[in-house]
Length: 360
Image (cartoon, rainbow, N blue to C red):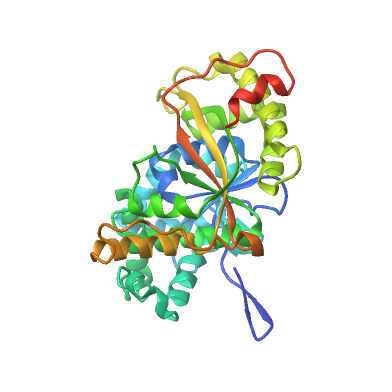
């Protein structure tokens, strides 16, 4: 990451594989979703030009998942069995790292530096007192313990709200700084955690569409789908970018691109269904994508709502949305992904009329 102290730029470590460049549609993926292969991760890996995630790395890690960094990875494995287990759970993603589709950096900036920066900001602001109480103050004191705790929480699916908050808020900040869209998990109306429902109240929707994706597949199979559907995916990515930018006619353009992509997916679907190179059954299905604007502090504010609810301060009270900052150009864009329980009929024909039903 590039730090600036008194106007002097200092370069810090870079983890991941090939650094992501500043062009195309970039989507940030939560490392929790990558570990569990949830819909936001699978959709983003197929739909994005490139994806970025937060990679827990050993202190002083330099290089990538391959090459010079491998020695440091081996050393970290000796000190943290949970780091080994995390790397094994991410083995399916290795082809994506090597292909440059997935990375943990943009230029020289590294996502791994973000959680500490979030903690430093929380520590200096009294508004977040209840949130700070959820975070262990010793988390950053011991590098080996820090790595072990992060990996352990990722493997468990996020039972420690203090760690989950730092990773989520850190990735949000990173994405906002680099113009990336953040993939979020959606939920059925009336369901979802307190934090999810609080964040949903802050969201301002730009557009929504339903598209088919691979829900369960190896990294190599995702790469194959990206190659086979390259033309339709390029058009859909452009439409998504226009949708989040609020361009005139973006909804109609997104409908057309989604319809064309859905038709193409249905034509080649038989090429993907079966067992992948890891011997696992490939699963596909439709997901709804809601493009929304969120305030930069959405993760912290929703966590604060949950902390107050847990303490009984808001028992029986309604959740408050609060200001979004959208009017001032603040915040970041998110793609809320929710698995659909039905498989819509593939659109027929062409033009905007054919795709209108896919957009809500």
